[in-house]
Length: 584
Picture (tube, rainbow, N blue to C red):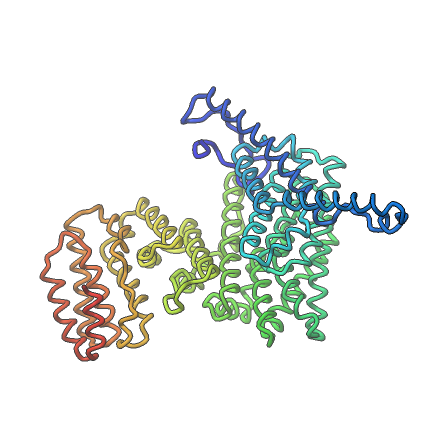
């Protein structure tokens, strides 16, 4: 039912909110009944979330007054023991109630319902804001895999709910203002205790969402940012070892807050905005000139993350030659996956935000400064090869980590934004998207969706030559994972359904498939003529692709296998037997 109803994302503005009481799939009476049922479920979830947060609060801080216990008279010892036994039983019961996974599920349920029916939040906005407190009990679970996942779900759901609650509060009263300010102080204090950088980033983003509305409590965010910058300055002067554990947190936190403080409505007055500009310039000079070359790897990576946060609101910093080379190094993966992910995300967020601003300017029939689009064009043209390279899987390292998969997904999403905005020609990227479709992971599926969108707009973008080139790119990428021809036994051929999307673009036309086969056979002949061992591996992979294509004559692939086998005989019996096993 939610698919037919307009969804309200966390980034929508208050004035753009539209509530529709009709549904295209069911009748108005059925939709009203569904909406009424959702309201009852929502009310029950709000009540349960409040109870869970209360249980976490009591379990974290306790209810026993120790000074009162020490003042008890000795003759009341027996009564006190009975009372303490009852208190321990009550404490154990509260501990069972303080269930982090349950709270995570409840908050996700609330977020899903509120995204479909934002009006359900109106009577509960104030109470939800007052109950969204991050207790120490939650941070105890940060070291475990399950607890870390639950904590991330709680923080992300809390951020979305806080954003929607602020939008629903048309007029922020004194009580709501106190609740928001208390929640901000709580999040700022908890941010100093977290160990994971990802948890810190999520906490600070949740903190920033509370100021996007008619709320005047912006001082907490600015004071936190100022403290991070001051601590970074102290570290750069003395480089004390005792500061090493916190400087990474300060840099990551400052970069995250730069994404919010770069907005024009993030300040209470002009003096605060001027101070932010001075702090921002000082932080940029520290990160780009000193901390990015720090001997400590932790500080170096955190500085690159901070630069990524600053680039979201000020991409003109790329005009600095030293920063441009540093960003290129991060995008190529030389500085680690975390820095690579941060820079990719910074570019994507900037391009998406600029697209929103341009569309609003067109709606208001206003002209936009061309330098903004010029920076976007510079980003797309200067770093496009690095974006494409980051989207391909690393086959030499074995199993990819979660961060590496996130890098691939972010790179594919960035390519989609660049194509949607028309910052580069589709034929410059279509062959690489076809090559990406050879794998079955989530980034490859996202590449397939982008590819189908390009094909729907212009069928000439994905022609025979582009598909053949895409298959060749994928084959070269796989063959590059084999350091020596004798290691061909480690080769993992592409699956039979590797290029199903590319073949779907041909509309199952036998003539077009035969043209594709002819193009691939031509590439095999050229590679065989070169005599290079790497090209022989590519030839074998191309033969594997040909074996799964329909509407073909068997003579061409058989002749290619015959020529290939003659070349492989020179590699030795081990490689020849491995190739034979793979071909079977």
